[in-house]
Length: 249
Ligand code: GTP
Image (cartoon, rainbow, N blue to C red):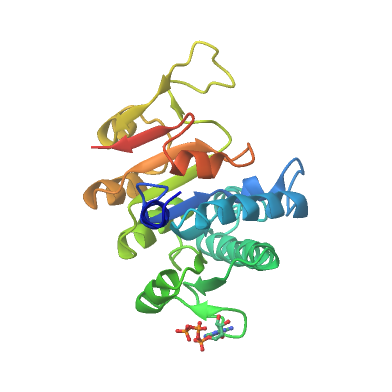
């Protein structure tokens, strides 16, 4: 290979995306356990993120807390919804620190920024600082949701993706995209390669909650729904390979 070719290869991005938001539910991190964190799964997710960082893509992450505490279910069991949501936000911080730990073990530089100040544990959310971290190739994990009750982590992901000028939100789920019905329950469910934000809202397809979808739509940020269950799939989908659904205009 000539020096010219090598230079071209070096500057040719492996992905059409420069900066992306990865949104994962907390349940992903519990693997096959009933709740909590499964260290092997957290390690695998960290390796999947590293593979994308290695493509030269800037990555930020929002993770949920369903593996630790679900605000909505707490509220359903008679707990005050606001308190339950704050407990969920603390659960997110636990997940963020676990992911940070696994990423740093494999040499990925990270920063955790929390929407609720807890300065001895992590940085507070400062948008301009988060930008600098990402420009330096660090993975920024945004913790504690939006810092407000009544907002989901999907909404936090759409909000931070908008603030950080992300090119896309990658929503990691247990299935490889959006289907007309639940593919685990209905074998005739069909897979969408592409679908509009409006279709998701009007057909109530439960990709993300309505606030998150509306924010992504207003800011014209596509949502890529893909499966995080298979090792290496995240990097494949970031390179537009494999099976996934794009939600866009
Ligand atoms: P640059 O110097 O701009 O490259 O960024 P930096 O994050 O390395 O600089 P800084 O001096 O801000 O941070 C050094 C270390 O302290 C990093 O590991 C940060 O995550 C951490 N750090 C910075 N601010 C806080 C904070 O408010 N709370 C906690 N717990 N850690 C912080």
